[in-house]
Amino acid sequence: MKTLIKNGRIVTAVDDYVADIVIDNGRIETIGRHIAVGGDVEVHDASGLLVMPGGVDVHTHLDWAFGATHTVDTFGTGTKAAAFGGTTTLIDFCNQTMGESPLKGLEQWHKRREGACVDVGAHMIMLDVNAGSLADMKTLINREGVSSFKLFMAYPGVLMLDDGALFKAMRMAGANGALTCVHAENGPVIQVLVQEALEQGLTAPKYHATTRPPILEGEATHRAIRLSELARAPLYIVHLSSGEALSYVSEARDRGIPVHAETCPHYLFLTNEEYERPGFEGAKYVMTPPLRERGQAAHLWRGLKTDDLQVVSTDHCPFCFNAQPYGIQFSKQLGAERFSEIPNGAPGVETRLPLVFEGAVLKQGMSINRFVEIVATAPAKLFDLFPMKGTIAVGTDGDIVLFNPDEQWTIRAAEHHSRMDYTLFEGRSVTGRVKKVFLRGQCIVDGATWHGREGMGQYLSRGESGRIN
Ligand code: DUC
Ligand code: ZN
Ligand code: ZN
Figure: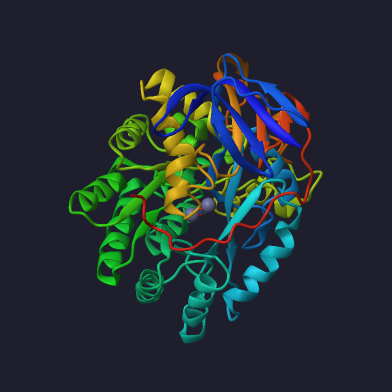
């Protein structure tokens, strides 16, 4: 059966016009005015709505073991939540285990992702860099379609690589057409600050933020950039949260170095005042890097306007506030006695598009084209999903969102589709709402109604990554 989306305002990173779209066999077959389709066709009227490419979120952690903790969303629940939020493509993180091949980590990830409701690709987190795993990186790139790697400069003893290992992995990625994604915070110095805080009896969630100051994000960002230059490896700084870190990215880009960066909605819309919430409530906002001082977000908006920041992704890394019903390892309550035990991560996959639309277009005066670019087109280009994902064009996947730019609504965790028991944005009124979502031509979200199914998401095997132009 064909799908016909009529009378919508089609907006991509470069286009803005009213037309009809016909999707056949999952791909966009025709775009034109007043198209008449005979036979078996499902018609959707998009009058008054924006018709935009499905969102591309290149930073999620679904069904992920993180130290002694585990994220609560399965691929089924996390991707359903993504779909309701207008996101039809994810790149999720899988990881190598110490002493094992990263290929084994990918194999296990493939089993977990079988329940995905939207299309998913994988980044590989490298934990154990040695001759064997460096060779496996080539196999991942050339045979398995994994062309991006995440390297941690934080969490010594758990995820962190030392500078030598970081450099070796960057060099291997760069030489083989892969993009190096870096979590840039100085882990060893953070460890000192955390230890000292605990010794002074400072155990509340707010000390998560004071022990991870922006200077340590800036220092690590600068170090990652310089090491990537030496390694001749394109770089992507994940979850950038501060003006200082951004200044190093801007400086490198001005010199023509292939450095890219993303930020996340929580850094654009929230501040460290959230840690002052009563009781243990501040734990809901414990993610890394932490929320920053009021005033930092202005730097991030500036970066998004000037293209020093190219992407807004979610870092959806969901841990429930309560221990029940899923268990303590899925819960913030692990850190009830000490902030250092609170699992680091927060949800966001279902609210990215409306929040960023309102913030970027309605409040910051950015164009709708730029909005589409930062939530769909640029990430698709950087991670080699474009043009099948991230735009609307003849021959590409029929991943489409119908979006009402005028509808005002209120964010409520109770109405979400994730397993999460809270949202960072509870009670926030936003303008702009996802109305319908199509995955390869199939309407999977229609208002509050779900037509998708677990297992319909496909694996996205990717080629050379790290080029945007
Ligand atoms: N970094 C992430 O990207 N996600 C969760 C935790 C972290 O430190
Ligand atoms: Zn990280
Ligand atoms: Zn993350």
